[in-house]
Amino acid sequence: MKPFKFLWICLDMHGCPNRCLHCWLGHGANSHMGEDDLRFMAETFRPFAKELKISSWYREPDFSDNYRQLWNLENALSTKKTKPHDELMSIWRAARDPGYVPWLAQLGLKKCQLSLFGGEALTDKYTGRRGAYQDILRSIELLKKNGIAPRLQAFVNQETIGEMSHIDELISFYNIEYAFAHQGTCVPKLYDLWPTLATLEQMPPKLTAYSLKHWNVKSLNEIFGKPEAKLYQKFCDSNDTKSFVTDKPVFFIDRNWDVHPNISAPEAHWRMGNLRHDNAQAVIERYLNNSSPAQAVRHNKPLSEIVHACGNPDGQGLFGQSDYIEYMLDRFCERES
Ligand code: SF4
Image (cartoon, rainbow, N blue to C red):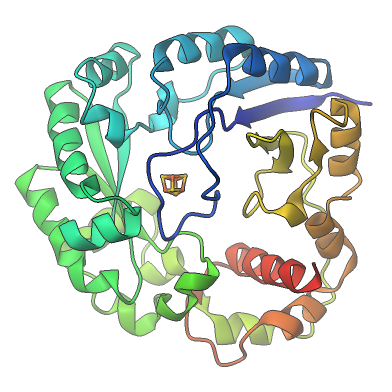
């Protein structure tokens, strides 16, 4: 078997303090895995990749109290580094652990992302945790004090758009350099609230200008995509099929050792195997052969069949093309299971 050029494997060692409404990574129980589990995962996959990157999380970074040891271990087990700390952080930890943000600064972090849904009530509601908004404000202050630029990520839908002017106020108040908006990944419970063209007309000026700069585009439509009805029309006669296989995949491994590719969501229909029951070679072969149920559907069924079964020909929600196909694929696989 030819080794991957680059393989990034992430183990959900400790879970997440949040329960976001838009979460596509799953709300499974928080786990308590040990350093030997991370070593086992890395060594199991090492023979199958020229370059390897190991992460001890794929939900909340640094949620574990031994985050510094885990960071050191990730680096020791990896052959390739990407951006410092992936420009991500735990706002939960920043608000509770005085040494955390100075530690991020020591790592050389220059920018870090924080997610908002509007003001306090909406951000707490969408993050699934009371106090999340106050933790974000505290994190912005701590990042600035430690020379790290906060980058605000605003999630826009028909409910949150009413509070996007609050993001403009935060940009001014904290003299924020980086911010951007998008709709995130659609999950069924948010489908009816998905942003439409009418939603975009309500975007406030600063967040609009920052978003265009962030995405290097000229219009919000280029960020948010097209109404579902247009995409449905485009794909309803399409014979397109696709392999998701690349030579630089990212794999997510959950607390039960189920392995999923980082495509759409780590749902059962993407499962490629289980590391306690299958060896890494068997898991990789399923990936390479498009054998997980969702990979097999996309690889073998014409897109028209998937979209006919699950799409809404009148839908006005905005989707990027590949996001829409993956949303349709997930719904199709759920129906089939
Ligand atoms: S922080 Fe990320 S992983 Fe945690 S609930 Fe929210 S979206 Fe999901």
